[in-house]
Image (cartoon, rainbow, N blue to C red; front, side, top):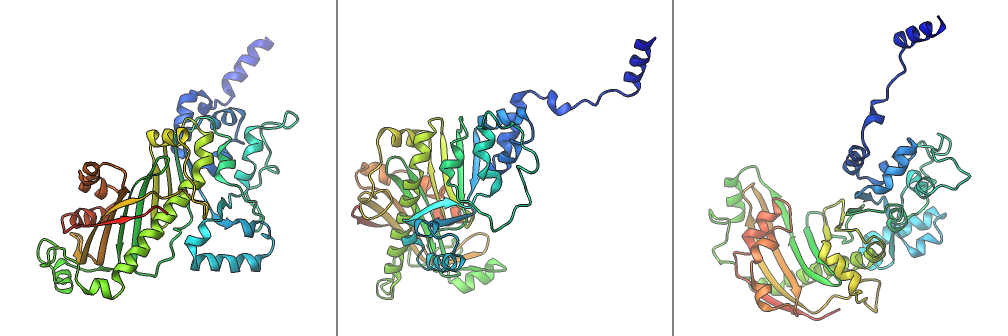
Length: 380
């Protein structure tokens, strides 16, 4: 009789079923890979033992860096006044500061990620709310590099690291974007710049402002005016080019510990929230760096930039189909001089234009149709 009552009660009050637990590990890993963000994954670690065991297997990781500080600041991080002064100095001289930078600013969920994924035998795997406090004090920040955080992941294939801002301090209204591909050294780099960007309401207004023909090109067929050499225009473009190459080579130098530790990496992108610069490495380039170590610059913590062959295109006014006008538009395509000439000159439009998202990809395609200027630069 007692068993009958027990059976009836179980039918009336059935035990709750956790349908999430019924999902196979492969589905959970698919969800975690869609999440990607390393901080969110750190929080997932404390949900359950199962999550805790699956998170280190995630293949697609995104690390968003909250702040970047210099080695000098790290020894005196308690002094807020000094930190503020240093931040102001770095904003004025971003490229020179980059040589001393490392990543930092990952808050408590990431501070405890090491302990969560590799816990002590005497510590329970699932932490309680006191061990994992989301309402932490905003002033309590411990600096952790992406290298430290990522060492807890075993099977990373796709890695994206996003800096809080670009390194190059440029005046408001100026356009400067670059994209660089690296192996053990620079493979190629594309730089797009403009002295100003004008957004117009319609193409008629744009044509009158820019004095261009219906094809968006000038009557000078892309020739650089004499004033470009005398009014500082060329000097400014040289500064843009060198600064972009320094920023790219410094980023590449900082990535080498991550690349060495994670043998499963197939794609690595280091970008910034401003969209100023993108460094990318594919599977073959990553393997090349592991086999052939990079050559470091003796003057600073960055990869040595080889001797370069450059192609430059210029337009005093460039009207894009969406009505955007680039004044003083300049495109520079860069490859090492040691590469065969036919490779440097071949299919430039495709790899140069694909470096940028729209509408700047269109700007690059329009610029490469204009007159080409060839330059050479020594290694530095």
